Length: 553
Image (cartoon, rainbow, N blue to C red; front, side):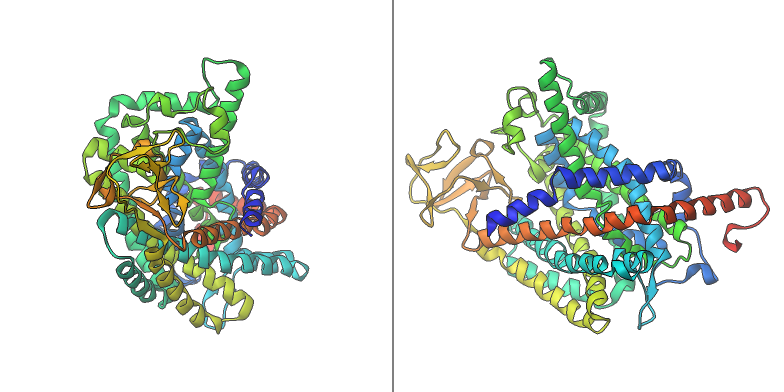
C-alpha cells in the first residue's frame, strides 16, 4: 500500500504537475499582459479601501479574506521549506522560487476573479465560492463532475493537510522544544480550534486578521534584524542566488546544467508548495469577501503570493545565506550532485527547520530558536483554522449546508486525535551501554553494537524539531540511560510512526490532486478573466481622467 501511494504521490507532485502549474501561471501572465506585477501598488491601495452599499456584499472584509488565505499558506513552507530548498538545491533555488511567485501572482489573480464572479448565496445567506463553484457555474452542467472531483479531494485533503498534519506538527515541536505533553497540546488546540471555527468564516477572518499579520511581522522583523547584523554578507548572498540559479560552477558544462536543473526543480517545487498558487484553496476564502467586483478582489488575492514568497520566503533565505551557517561543503557541487538528485542530504549538514533555527540562533542567540519554534506552532494553528473553512465549503458543496455542523466538530476531533498520537509516534531513545558511536552509514551504536528498537536498527535520530538528522550533526551523550542530543532527549520512531507517515503521504497526495481540476478550469475560463480585467482597467482609466468614479460604473 505504501509503495502504491508513494508512486501516486510521485506522479501528482512530479515534474509534469509542477510544469503544468508553472506554465498555467505563465500563460495567464501573458494573457493579462503582466497586470499582476505592474499593478502591485494599486493592489495595496485597494486592500484597505472602504466599500459601501452594493459594492460591499459579502461576509468578511477583503483584508480578512486575504488574511484567511494567508493563514493557510504562511507556515512551515516559509520556515522549513525554504531551508530544505537551499540545503538540496543550493542558493539558486531561491531565484526559481521568485520566478514561481511572479507567475503565481497571475494564477492567484485569476482565482480571485473567478471566485467572486461565479460565487453563490447559500441557504444561510452567506457568499460561497471557489473552484467547485466556478467550474459548475462557469463551465456549465456538463463539467459538474470535475467540480465534484475537486470538492472530494479538497474535503479529504483538508482533514489531512489542514487538521491532522498541522496539529501533529505543533505537538511535536512543543514536546521536543519545551517538553509539553502532546495531551496538553491536543486539548489546547482542540479547544482553540473549536472556539474559532464554530463561529464560521466571520470569526476565522477576525482571528486570522489579528494573528497572521502579528506573527508575520514578528518573524520578518527578527529576520530583518539578522540580515542587518550581517549586512556586509548580503551582496554575496544575492550573488550566490543568481549564480546558483544557472548552475554556475568551475566544472564542465554538463555538470553545470545538472546543478541548474537541481536548483530549478527544488525552487519551483518549494515555491508552489509555499504559496499554493493554482492549488485552488485560496479562492474559497476570497469568495466570501465583501466585494462585488471580481477583478478588484482578484487584485487583492494576488498579494498573497507576494507576501508569502517574495517577502517571507526571501527573508528566510537571506537569514540562512548571510548568517554563515551553510558552508561550501554543504552546497550542491559536482561531487555530491548525484546523491542530491537521489534525495540524499550531505552528511553533517543541517536541513529544514533546524537549519533556519540554527541561522537565527547563530546571530541573535537562543531567542532565535524560540522564534522559529513558536513561529512554527502559531503558523500551524492558523493553518488549522484556515483550512477548516476550505474543507467545510467542499463538504457543503457535496452534501448541503446541513453537513457543516458535523464537519466542524469532526475537525475538532481530528485535531485532538492527531496531536495526541504524538505520544505513540516517537519514543525517547534509552540504552543500557555507555559508549556512543556510529557506523560508516551513520547508524547509532552503543558499546560497539547498533542500537535496536523493536528489533530494528535505528538508522536515524530526531532533533528538537522532529526532523530526522545524520548522527554527525549532533552532540551526543548518555544521561541516566537516555541518549541526549544537543541537550535534548533523542527520539526514535514509536509504534504508530509508520501509520502517521503513510497518512502524511496520503494527505500530501490529495492536496496535490486538488490542483488538476482547478488548473483545467483556470485555462478554460481564462477568456473571462482577460475580458473582465480589460473592462475594469478601461473603466479605471476613465475614472483617473476625472470623468466618473470607478465604483459607480
